Length: 421
Image 1: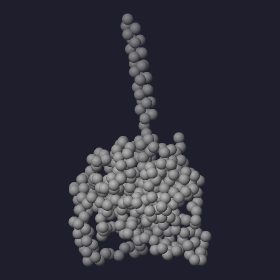
Image 2: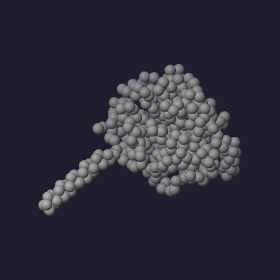
Image 3: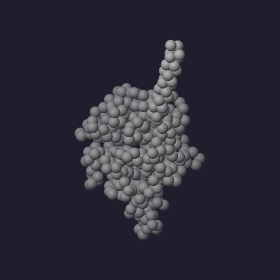
Image 4: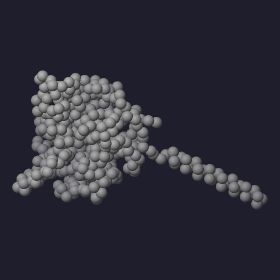
């Protein structure tokens, strides 16, 4: 009898051990790893008409898996526009249109030329939504790409803040053939000898003007106030999300059909009435404590299960909300990053289990587990070779998991990366 019990005990222990091994194998199989991609050197094809692309400020894949590229022609310099002179003094190049439509083979299949700006989305009917500057006012505008005409716009204040600045709000093209700008990085570089010290009287006047503007247009203002960094659509719920630059960034939600304002919020789910106008609440240094409000260059995306991921680039963080703006959690990423910050555009893997984050400063695509923000890996490094990045700014993913990227600064190009199993 004792021998039988001993034998059964050994069998039980063996089966339990086998069960543990099976469980470990299942858990191990569920551990997420960073996806792998290979650079596609055959996409896109050379642009027609002697065009040269400017910095990419918007990138979107439409329902047919064709790619819309929103670029900044004013980034081009004189030496890049010598084919526009009369007579031309070089074979290339000329200003491109600011919207270029590419098919899956990399051929240009359409274009139109709205004002430049930042952020874009394309709906299921093919209408294009751009955060651009029209008559000196930055706003979200809806365009019919067949005609290039603006057909609707979100509400906006009749004036811009006195502190509105940045390359996306730069002066429009001069319209003089062959004449370009100082280049896409001019405003980011410190001139030799440093920048001149500002005049205290000028500083005081500017501070007073800003304070007066914020009284006139408080954080509760139910319209776009400053520039647009990002535009996203939630078509099932008929909503348009815009990242407004005002006061470091506000998430603003509009009705997709009427463009009427519906709701908005700030960092940590602050109601618009709770957002402060004290700039000390936006101060941040790398590796330091997180600011109470959004720091700047806010972008966002909306997952299929109704979570809003807001990337506060200049504070190296991503905050997660539900559709009503209730704060859920925060991911801090590459907190040592200075200059422009690490958390740029937010994109999802096709199965929505991963976050793809474009990093303008470190020139990486970061792959994060969407549930807990754990970094699984990166792709890319600074450089000008195919597959490298120089000013990684925009990203988009098609239905097959193909990854597209767009660059500003010295990059000024789009690239395609094919998933590797």
